[in-house]
Image (cartoon, rainbow, N blue to C red; front, top):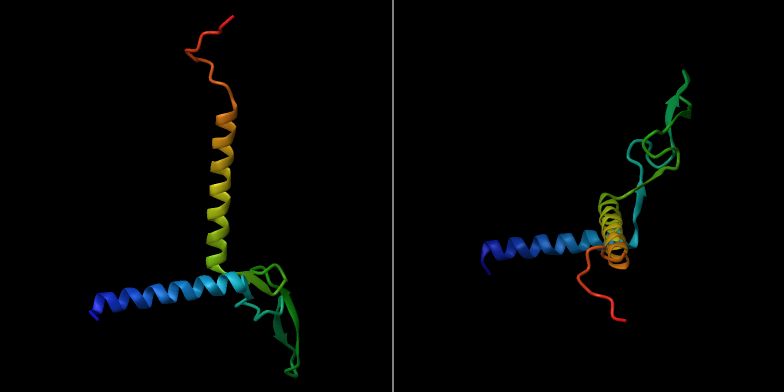
Length: 102
């Protein structure tokens, strides 16, 4: 097996694996707050307590994966394009060359 063929096979396998992960588990823990929804602060004695509300995940502790987000953008673009095509197909054309028959 040649090197470019092996590299493309590995890249395709990794891509399909990530697509599978995004399909099965579209959410992941927030990296900033470690899935808590807030940042930990420590008191003078070293006891951890609740800190600021995490702005990255809006306090939920989970975020959508990048691949799933890109998929949602693609689907939204596709649907708006289809809706525009269907709306254009339903409207009658004003400059039609057909002559009405009596």
